[in-house]
Length: 266
Image (cartoon, rainbow, N blue to C red; front, side):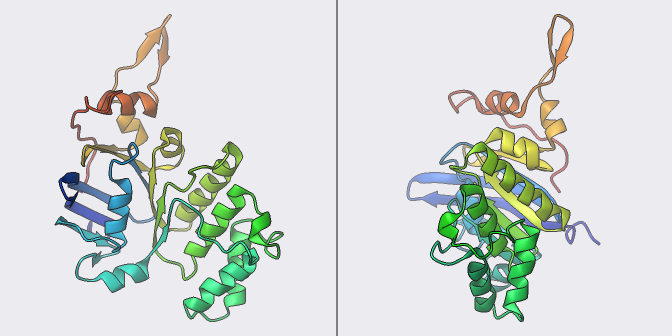
């Protein structure tokens, strides 16, 4: 496998403006197949814009992007067949049961044996016992897991999760985290956008921080932590957290960041 084939997502020089507002100013990153890549940043920094461009919902003003080997601008249909997108709020039908939601999506995708597809996904996401219940009776975490399960109907190789735990309680967030880990363990490539530092810290193989329209740092958690010197209190070394790294690079007021390159981005 060549280096390019090993990349599920390849982004170079991505730019996007809304009238006078320059949201993306040359975004570069790659995502390895079967990995979890976290795009981290504050609200309004452009994370969702990146996801919309990669999922062909929005056209970039400049730059290139390839998903699963297909160009998002010239091979949009192929890209859409390769991906699934889960937005910030669960897109499930509360009147239907969990199983009925999955069967509906499987039929819309013209899959054979939609009932078996639904049952397999219910088991995979630990929802078998709740499969016959109306989704209106589900907890927040169960709805989100069902939403992700629906995204996997048809086994797309790449899935975009745009702030998947927004508004969830701590227990529900942990349930979603486990579901995301299982996705990667089965070979699915996950691009996760989040504003929660602990979420990126717990899930991601690589983390990129988007700030003022650019990726200012991109690396593993260990690489990011090495950007800051260890602090010592009474001769006990304190390792920096991802929050320490984020606030140092971006600045508490969001205006004091500086560009750093960590690891390889090819």
